[in-house]
Image 1: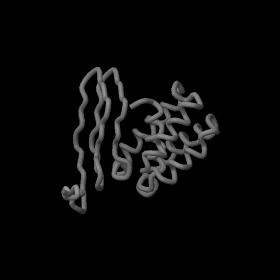
Image 2 (image 1 turned 120 degrees about the vertical axis):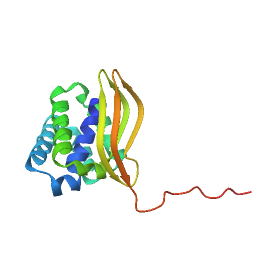
Image 3 (image 1 turned 45 degrees about the vertical axis):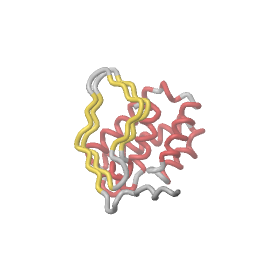
Length: 160
């Protein structure tokens, strides 16, 4: 996952309702550190950060945050990347059910080593979507559970 997409995903994970309801203090603390760093270092993206917080499952808000962070020069910020990785790691360990809200979307990912995506539980929608993914090692996707309370939509009948 490119660094800024990881940051946007971490904001969405940390801001999601599920993270607040079930998270241990370590998740709350790691998200607070990420948010504080972004608002202090990249004040111009505060409104976009708040947009992701208000709708963490909205892909367009996350994409806009990525765009604004890129414009602000955050793509090479290693401290920002480390803080985002910490949020993702803590959510995965202490509040894995948060993936039900956010899911996993890999877009334009290039990793020099292995990529592993596991233990994803989603209520409706897609558990994992991937586009333009390249790994120098193995790509492993496992333990994806998608639950749906209804039939998937069917296309309307063809007209003559």
